[in-house]
Length: 237
Image (cartoon, rainbow, N blue to C red):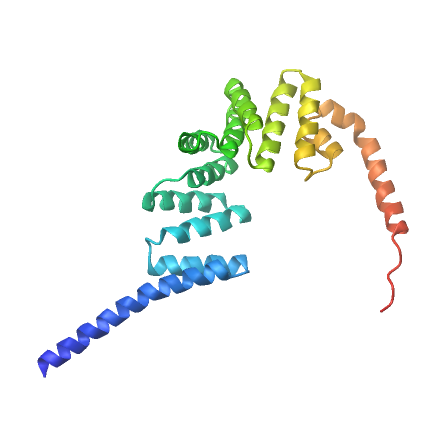
């Protein structure tokens, strides 16, 4: 009788342990398949509570935190991921981006360098290491990295940002024509922001901004007033 009870208890403990392992993967799968960012993060967090060594959940959750702008959590999750998994360039790049967005430039540079060492043609790592160097005041290395990123094939958004970094460097040393050419190239590759807006807000000097401010406000008022009036009336259903 005692042996039977011990056997049943052992079987129960084994079942509970197995269920916990399955539940961790179940929550992970829910996170992968979900459509709501908030719920996906909740599912990955629950999976990690059940299995703290589930590396893929750190990676997935870290990426979601990045798009939410929670860069301290990006750093935490990708550091944990790299502790658990064989290193890969994309993880080092993401960790570098977390540090760059947090304005912590030395570890950003170090992680982008790790990514480049693993993938010497990694355009994204060169582009954002260039910006980290620029923000650190290491302009010569920033120029070299921006030039390399512009030469490589790959992510167009990163290449556009490399042009923007180089434009800022040119502007700093008074090479205004080269800066303007890089702004134009950046906009042609990735027109996320209107060219005139990108130019004046990112590259114009404070004196230039003050001189065009009245005209900008008048033009904006004109667009808002007449643009609204020119909208066609809604059709009744």
